[in-house]
Length: 309
Image 1 (cartoon, rainbow, N blue to C red):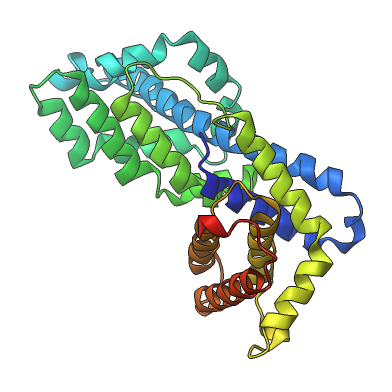
Image 2 (image 1 turned 120 degrees about the horizontal axis):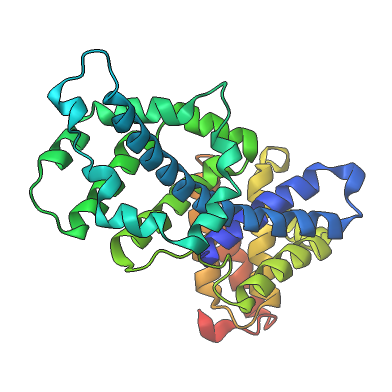
């Protein structure tokens, strides 16, 4: 499920938490467990998106049935268009026992009566052009059903402020994880014949990579701190962003300790991450430090992984 870049991001967040909590700095195992828990939370967020979809489908079905009992029902109330709740994809979702078992565990997150999220999302959907156009579309192919759901999520749900608030209450990391998880969610709906909940890590090597990256960055922290000081002569050390230091230490950990990873790939990954998760000058700073460090260690014949450059 997770890409190596997203693994790096979660390790970065965990290292930030570790280095920010000086009182618990000796309890590395505690932070490692928290990191693994955060990885599992990404899977929970993925399941929650399907929980949300199922709840909206069920709410729509209930609303259309109850509309028949209005005091003065219209023809559209008596004979509602139930395409959304009876389409092929919705049926596949609602009879997927393994998925329902997972989603039932997370319904409580969406059932907070103070927010009434499902009702509000439904009202927005029910009056939308996307919904109206879908009901009028005579093409009954399942691809149309899937495209409709993807459009609904991308245009009416994923940017919903109330949903973001609820996600933030459940996990401080879910806001950052949502775009990535939504991409997987959309891809699964569009390309898979059967919906399933993927494992957090694609294989055990990814989990080992995360743990090793986390531990190595802490173990060699002082050594990496000295490298940063040595090669940041033209920079004000007090103004170096905290995140930049963490990213550099992670990059050093990969370059010096993980010889199976291409050095150039590791360098590019952290340069890119710094561009999105730190300051405006971070990309230039991280790029300059890594470039100079790698060149120096090659010149001194201290880098074993030069063939990967």
